[in-house]
Image 1 (cartoon, rainbow, N blue to C red):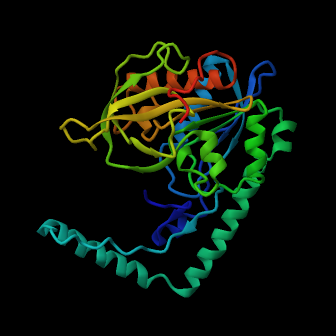
Image 2: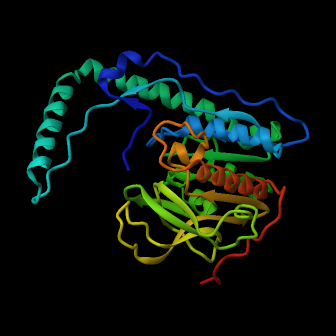
Image 3: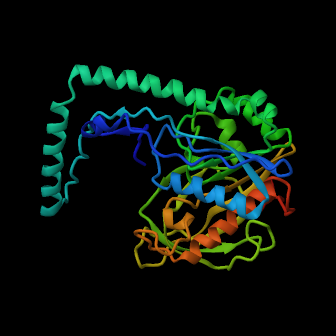
Length: 344
């Protein structure tokens, strides 16, 4: 997976002062469960994040099941990215691949020539400013701050990287004490160096191939995160995560694929239990995770969405899926969390 720490190529440096229009947190309903949505990234940043923020706020407003009382978002500081050399050509590269490599090498050399010591110093200063701003934004996840804000649960929507949480161990204990973590897609590509987080989540991103078609099987059709959804649930195209540190004896599976998706190729995938979504409990806290949510058209059911490949029904079902998982995690709906396999 490409790494991107809120960075832009050198040619975009002049745009670094432009602030993006960020959605606002909805007005709090005192009777609703109180939720924070976190979309900070220090690794790859998905273009679907603004869509995810908007859709989550719409789901909250329409369902009235919970209130989003805060959006913990990316700092506005943009860090210039030093150009990376193109990957080496494989021995069996064809003529077209060689031409692309030559063009990529030329662009790299031109960009590298512009990476002066002054620009490098500016990049390091911007990175430090970004780090400080990210830590300040994430201070809302300190256990004392969560308690003061009477937060019931936190959503990690497509977060990535080593988030500078103010108290990582304290955050885990806060969830265990009866609160909840709800997480989408690359939330499993987050805090890789902090094992208690991946253990809490129930799995950790390992890799992915090209986007593929997939038919998902509901392993607990009665669970709120699957109730009313078809099985199989067909998705035209999505980035499917391969998960490591996953153990069926520690999670309750919701959706899985009976084959490994084949990166968009037409041939049948390899038979395997391919986990996609699950729930689990830890202490008296609850965790809901789905690896779906890479593409805008998986989140957004607008029929006129640009570059739509998935029909709107896929996004409508995804919204139903995550709302069910959120309601379960917030203890607004009941469903099993019994592990899907006996303990080893």
